Length: 229
Image 1 (cartoon, rainbow, N blue to C red):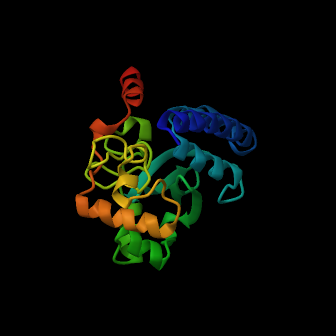
Image 2 (tube, rainbow, N blue to C red; image 1 turned 45 degrees about the horizontal axis):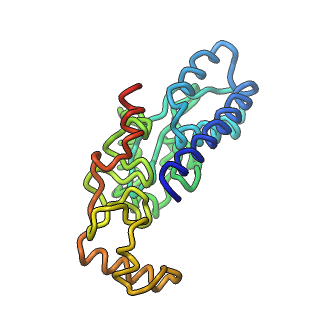
Image 3 (spheres, one colour; image 1 turned 180 degrees about the vertical axis):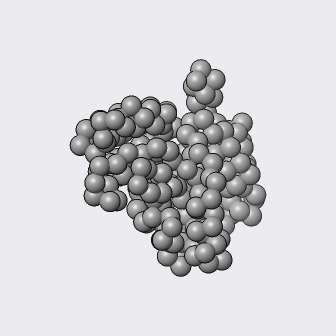
């Protein structure tokens, strides 16, 4: 999917998410806290991942009672997957957030990560995770404002893109890897249609030397948006 088309599709998703959040907040947020809750939504009004998280929180309140989101904190990020903490009036809750969706994992203080997730994010133990997640954490920064992350696959500066990311640069011609003909030329085919072909191309690509993400790769219209903000 061309990047501009994807950007427009996500803009429509954002509008839908905002409607859902506002509707759920009418029932979830105490009247005295509504202004603060609205401010947080406005802070992330263009960030799809944060809005997905807020919709999940307000639609399924962890304590099944009135509550409001005060801030979204970043615990960790790896391979385009964010481990976020939502601080509310009643607790600090852990969510796994990516383009694929949102998963609620419980209250931070309960050490709510599975062994698989502890290993994935590089924590030696539950206690190691709890120490970090209950400590001072940076605010989650909206993706369209964080130039150190790819706006599509969320690779950090210096990391490789997720294979298939439209921002990745082709190491053969310097164009967009998903749009140039180099991938077909390297395999000697007209199109990549099987998993075996994809794996073969990935091996060829890594042998050639993939180009990691850098802020200079961000589409120009996103850079202009950041400057305007």
